[in-house]
Amino acid sequence: MRRSILLNNKLNGLFITSSDITPAANDLSGINLGTAGDPGLNQIQAALGSNSDLTGLCVSMAPLQGPLSLSAEGNVFAGPTDCTTSASGVVRSTSCANNVDVGVVPALGTTITIDLATCH
Image 1: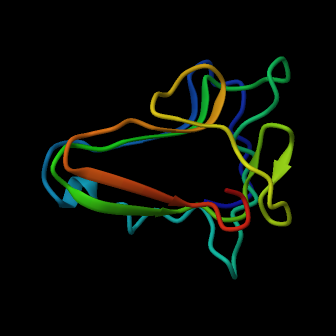
Image 2: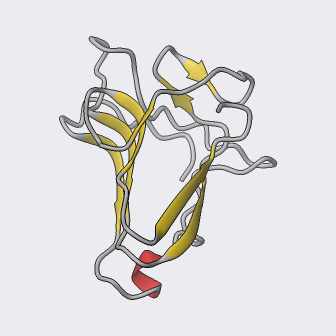
């Protein structure tokens, strides 16, 4: 997904979740929100009061999936923090609430890594 504006959605800008507990339903490798050579340039979260989402990017996968990785380089989060050039931090949480930039819901036996490149 490239050059999309995901704001003012009332809940999450983008919510990625599994459809069941099978490995295929939890495979994040087919989702590409941006890479080093092809940044996403998606506006995923805005500052509070500026059409922000509950959470910009929310990821919630099934338990017992092991390590999962999502490529999301070169997107814009609240601030604005442009992750194509900024080394700033984005606001992360273990829930998808409170207008955070990235929320990763914990699941036993599943570790989710989101590659934001320059942003941390």
